[in-house]
Amino acid sequence: MNSDHEVLLTPAEVASLFRVDPKTVTRWAKSGKLTSIRTLGGHRRYKESEVKALLLKTTSNS
Picture 1: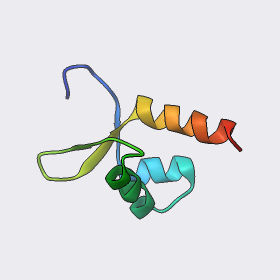
Picture 2: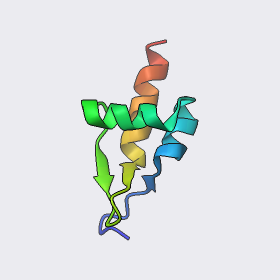
Picture 3: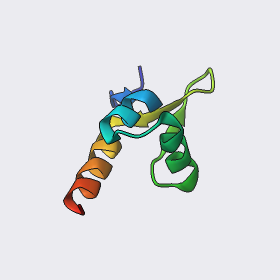
């Protein structure tokens, strides 16, 4: 577990929250919309706090 105890989400979990495809979440990371953390195995993970902030931002703009 990481030292600051931040909850990390998988691309599938993030995609489920936004109702998009996991590949869309990966594109967001590549474009800088979300910051991804790479696991030792090379998989992407996303900070729950950052995902929730983006979710609030996108839902308040609708």
